[in-house]
Image (cartoon, helix red, strand yellow):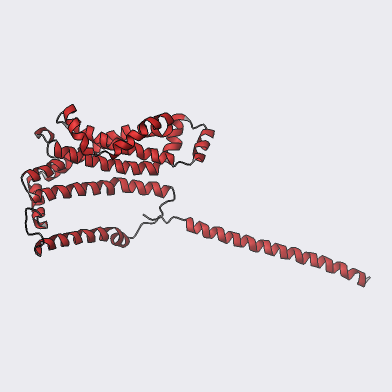
Length: 315
């Protein structure tokens, strides 16, 4: 009996050992999989803690300040070492700063800036209100794209200064002429930016929206526009650049006491009086306003959109 029972016991033990070994292997595989998932989660984790002030200073403030100091040093060196010895061609940084100080003491510096900025922002908002539905229409209706798409591309490549003479003839020397030039320069860029963004929307999103009942205007608002937002923002930035350049061209060419003195008119006044310090003051103010609008409005908005889509981890 003992001899006959022993093999049976061994068989049961071997089965039990095999089962235990299989469970051990499954447990090990499960642990490995859990570790892999934890590692992927760690890679996908976005650290939203506040950036240290020292890091912000060294990474975002020091580089542009260094560039400004370097430009001023090269500028002053050109005058100090006699490379350019004619103040009528290149004023010194001190001369330009004197022009800034004079305009500030006279109370006209902020007036120059506000006159142009208010026109530029209002004209850009008008271009936004016209360019957005136009771009959506061109992107979604095939016949409209075939008819208007090439015209928009051609208008975008047309220099904004070309619209100033006809706008003056049509509307006269007034603010309406300024806004017309801004619209003609900015609307094509905004519309083409939205068209480009819509073209990059995955077809799966559109099919999913139709399945859920998001068609027509509802689909455009809830599906197309959010998905096309990165490309649309790029079009808005370009549209603002065209708005600002169009306005400067209009202010330089079309001058009138009724229009006030904006930055473009200030630039033209410097040319008429052969005051290079005033010319450089106007150029610097135009540059500063363009940079400030980008840093205060478009860059934070772009970072927020990209971060919400997982395309930007660190700001």
